[in-house]
Length: 329
Image 1 (tube, one colour):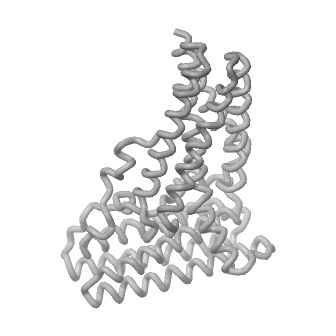
Image 2 (image 1 turned 90 degrees about the horizontal axis):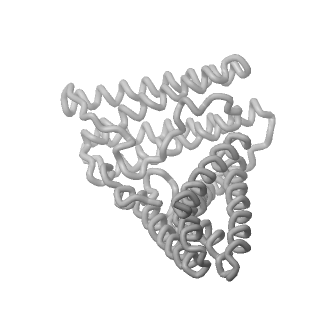
């Protein structure tokens, strides 16, 4: 379930609280990180798609140029010492896929990742430009926003050229990306939390009491409480301005409802007054829930199906056995 710290995003700065110097510092570190990611993409594609690898090499070089421009601006305005602040320290930034997860990604997946990266960077520069009072800093940020927007088109054309598939019009691509960011991802996180985290208290109560009514009450409390917590955590974590993830209300609602649904799925069988019948039904529902989560991760999150099944089923089984063992003690 969502922790108290995650609920209020402790440890992260609000973008509106950043000074111009801190905005430049975040941009410098972000350009450096993105350049390294593009080099990792290039290395992953070099043997099979050498032309695509060359494109990402060029994009990495451009990110390096942007970083030098930002450093020169910082040196001119604020001196040599750059504050130590990165985008993961700022609330609302869309998290990048770790480099060690990039192995065996298809060209289509890499293209989508690049589009998301550049779209996020362009939004950041546009938002940052509105906060800059210095004319030269604002001009630099606007110029960089336009360049990053051009990268999105470049990554899009890259996918069409090398995959030989129709990518659809821009409105459909944008709509699908928003659906993933605003509904699928928070909904999946909520479903995983509700389906897995409520297993331990539910089955601990079931095997400790062998009372279906008491088990049902605990399941209802855990599911509804987790839904409220996850909904608030998602809604308060990001206003969508930087990440492009859309309305926090929609994301919070999707996360909260799916969390509650995930928990209620294996709690409601305890409406059946016979303990073992209810428990067997609940067990099969848990198996269905874990299967659905694995499918969603494979279908929308580009997770290999066997890895998705292994991760979700293994984690769910551990939590389930924890509840059974504690309840039987």
